[in-house]
Length: 243
Image (cartoon, rainbow, N blue to C red; front, side, top):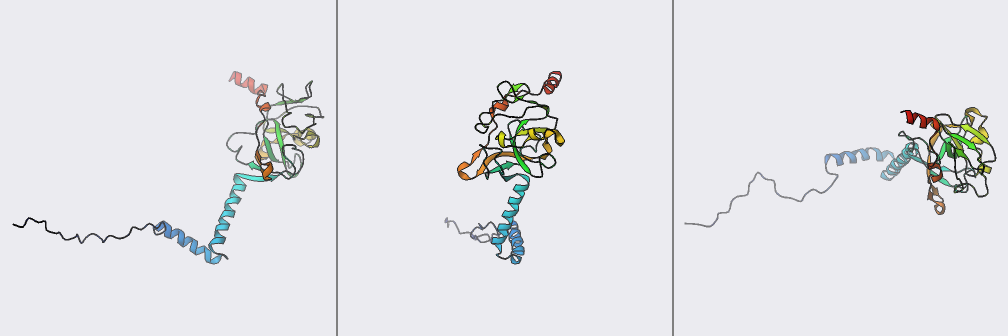
């Protein structure tokens, strides 16, 4: 009796083994992308390189429009922190999801109808409901009854203000000042103008988050701690107490 195992015939229903397809473009999606690129490149000088550059340009344009954009400092009103010619990165999403400008923020805003037909960069000193006064017995600005120590960012030798004022900031408005007070046209100089020198929150383009050029001056911009200790306006405190 033959006890050896008899060889069996290979199942002819199975396809012959072959090398695996490792190409990411051989599938339907890959062929679709390739066909789409091939449809446009013949019309563009430079072909794929030009198409890539155009896509990058569109991406940068979208970022500049909706997310962030550079802003060149036009004057010395924010020295010594921001110098003429510095470029700051303006965060356009900072106030788009419910949060509003806070005291101490450096903002860029459209001054049309309030300061002039241009964009400006200033520091927020008062927000809606704040009582802003200059000055206390030591020459410091007071916000909601608390004196603010601005020595950490004021231009050396400048006083907080040589102009006296006593204002309550309307809701939806901001009271803004330059850090170089002796070289800044700001809310103090427009108290008699439309809006009383207070700019509308809707006119804020974004928050300046850092200096990006020149590289040797690049740094992140932080909100001074002095403003964090300012209490809420009395009206807000009363509403909270009864709420």
